[in-house]
Length: 159
Image 1 (cartoon, rainbow, N blue to C red):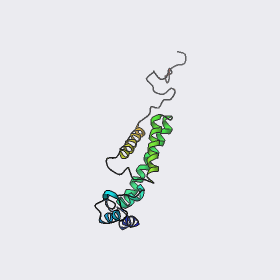
Image 2 (tube, rainbow, N blue to C red):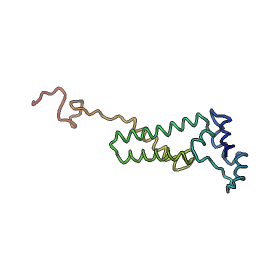
Image 3 (cartoon, rainbow, N blue to C red):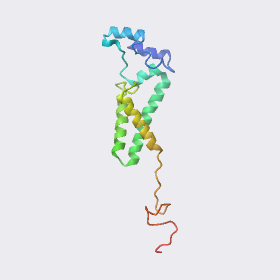
Image 4 (cartoon, rainbow, N blue to C red):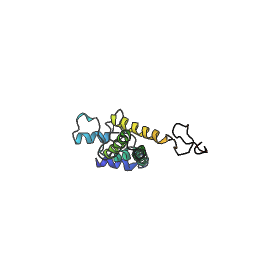
């Protein structure tokens, strides 16, 4: 496995390509699979998303995915603080934190057709949309339709 990690040092900027090192198509990976007796010879991966990203996608992919994970968690936390601890916001923070921590021990969000990738991307899109929602500025005496406040700006008191 150390030899596979060193493959990432050969092209540290953009890596060697998505799933190119540890997939079943790579001759070095097939040799490693025979050596450690992996049944099915379908491929294997590092048990750390960030090492896997560095080898496959280089520093560029590592930085972009890292920013994606951190921004999703940050926006979900911001939504939680703004929303008054709604169940939806707590769910988004929990999911984004779970996948951020899980990335240290497993690679499951960069693989196609997985529930983990769907869930994380759903949360990322949802919290990004919620961050763009404009909230009405409800100030006393501000412009309202008359339903939210009995007071109108500039109206005489008592009349």
